[in-house]
Amino acid sequence: MKVAFISRWLWEEHRRAPERKGYFLELAEAVQNQGVEVRALSQSRDVASSHARATLGTLPVRLVSRDQRSVTGAIADKIIKCWGGYRKAWTDAMHIRKFLDNEGPFDILWAQCEEPDGLACALARQMGALPSGKKFPNLITQVHDLRYRFLEKEVRFASRSSLSWVFAKSDVVVANSPLTASWLHQHYAVPQNKTGVCRIHLQESFFKEAAALRAKQITPIQQVLYLGALNEKKAPTLFLEAAWELREKMPGFEFVLIGGETEHAPAYRKRFDSLLQRPGWSGSVKWLGKVGFGRLLEEIMRSRAVVCPSRIETFSRVTIEALALGRPVVVTSTTGAAHLIQETDAGQIVSPDNPQELAQAIEIVAQNQIFLENASCAVSLMEKERTVEKAASDLTALFRKTLN
Picture (cartoon, one colour):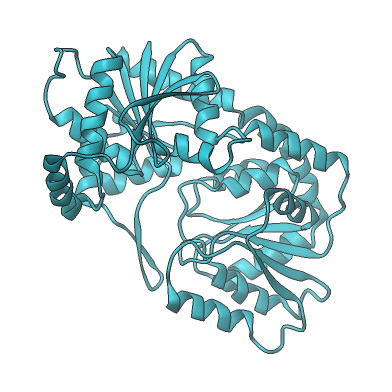
């Protein structure tokens, strides 16, 4: 089996941290290790010419310049941007066509669909036969996130025509959790027989650091930790409202927030600041902003409970990281990883947008030793079920099912 992997994040992860193997490189290499030939196409600002060759680990990669496109392509890109919102969808589709023709034939075209890659792959498929007459491979799009709009307390899926069109043109749409798969069926009309699930894995570097931290036997202190960006989706204001309810019920506890701004939202930041600077906290709440990965893991280990109050989340990597470190989690029912809390009983699941229910769950989890004990038992489950080999097995099984 020969697979073409389309991922702009493949090179971006390498560019940001060249000393550390990225999530998508690790996954692609694990797929290779299962007997699949994988060749990748990624975008980079670091190359001046189209389709430069590179190797990441053991993975052959073609790099495409982000800035190189034809006059015709620039016009088509502007037209498609009005529909799909992506700046270079047509140009990317032409790069994909060239890649498939030069490097093929391929059996599978594997793309990340929450990025413009999904639209570019679907457009490439619509262009008819490949120049040399090669057959266009089966298109598998892998969902890592979806699009939402927030109207007061209501969450609405932004099922833009381009995203629905990508799913319609795909042979299989791969979700990162059973909950996401249900949303694909319910909100994007993806048939259940066209939907698959590939688990989110924890990277090998994480497992090594987690094992080293657990060996230090860090004792949790009276700390409750929020992890997430400062935006409506992650809901840090909900955490602050719950903490305010608990400031007198849980004396001696500190409520800590870690995360930075990922989008320009002045109104939301103003609301966050007003809650953070409320008189009467008495030093029981603090926001650390962004911190390094090592510091982040240490803060998880120091906490009696980790809180992820997202209004909606296709998965939640924080949840499995906390469980892998042996710490209980409070998470919303609209989070893809919530079923792991239910299976391990290592925390509580709450309704979204309900600060009173969140406060009650935090109080129960942070002050009850049984949740720490259950979370300690969950460590072995994460080490067994959240490996890159397991994720690669999920994907290769879907690849073979598609071909059969």
